[in-house]
Image (cartoon, rainbow, N blue to C red):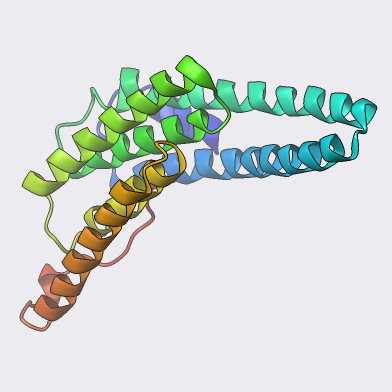
Length: 202
């Protein structure tokens, strides 16, 4: 699916909601298995290291590096599609938010296996993408929009896992909970036609 959607993205046209979701889901499916492999290998490596099994550690580490390289190439591919094709081809706020949130997510995933200055640089790219998303969301999307409702969860997890800022993460999560609670109260006053129901997120 990824190869097919890359061809669509390279047409440099505005994607429909369905096409946009297919692009996101295609990459998500590819990345999920690789991220799971990386996490499992990292866990096994730590266990073998604690046992002093240096030979096993070396084998696992070598294989983990291969997985990291594959993931890095996938993430690089995603960023090229977003920066060179999809983002420049849209002037619709919802699509812009979708793509920048996707960009923030994948820079976050890239930061998971980086260290030192390299991790800081990647984390900064993720933060910028999330901030761009948040700014556009506030001014352009309805409070009931599923992308707007889901963004704070990703943003707070990013602060917790990558920025090591649990206080900021909790603040964002509480703020999001307050907004969702308000939306639930207001839903009784809204007509059904004005409520946007859930759709796949990046």
